[in-house]
Length: 354
Figure 1 (tube, helix red, strand yellow):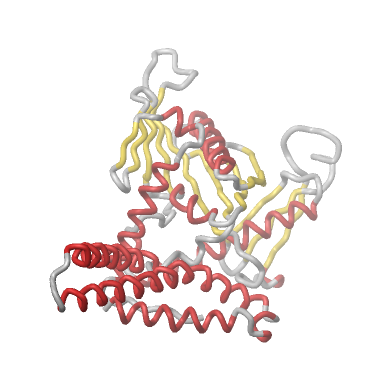
Figure 2 (cartoon, rainbow, N blue to C red):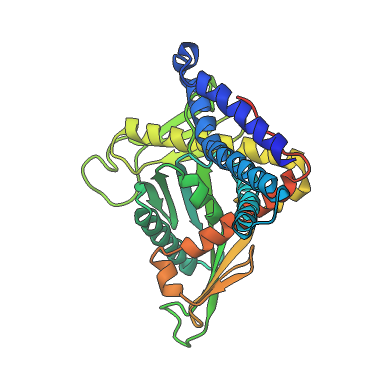
């Protein structure tokens, strides 16, 4: 089984090595990007395959020598080679777990206060601070896009941003005593987080004839040109009914550009949700679906406790988590996602084509 998988990896990687320098591929921006992504995805598995073949040869050589007579040193070599083969086989299978095709993308994050009134809006602001700090710790760049009425929209840019932040999609629940609570009673509030992979025009084509674009004067604090010109933009995508409003920038053109980025991401998300719903109920239950109705994590201030309900992981480092130290949760969620994907692929296996 593993030899067949290694042969498939070798054949496909060899094909990609030729495609990546093929002039017809290089001249096609979309095709070139697809081939490059698959090449980078397959490269680690191809390297492990080379090591696996070397370990298999070492084991075969040791077995041949032992057939001529027992030798303690050769026996030790055989034992080490077999152990290495086992490690490499597991590594190859994990390397070939099908990755989310969006993992390498930048993300657009939308945080919205949920149940809990003003306290929910404050909690949304705390989540915004936590996630932007996490992005900065990972050396990603963050771009504020809109902030109003307890809602925060921002972009996180960097290679693999979606692979990290996709696990933050869902409902985040907080249990704490609000600053306005005179009796010291603990309240429960929520905020929803949507994590959208940012897509390019070539990935989601939006027909301009399908758009209704309205311009109006920005609200909020006064100032030169803020609420004195029609700089705010509202774009409605008529086929899906998706509406995006943007007024954070003073320029109508800048607001329109940001709104279109969010619109493309929402259209893409809606298409993915429809596709996933059509596949299987089991897929919906997987970690990282980003379902906004799913309660994914609870932050308890009284016990300084953070619990991720998807993987039943609890830590007592609330202060660190709120400062953006989410690495432990991301690592555990990534491992769980890989385990689930490996189980799904156990009976099929194989290497895809581009």
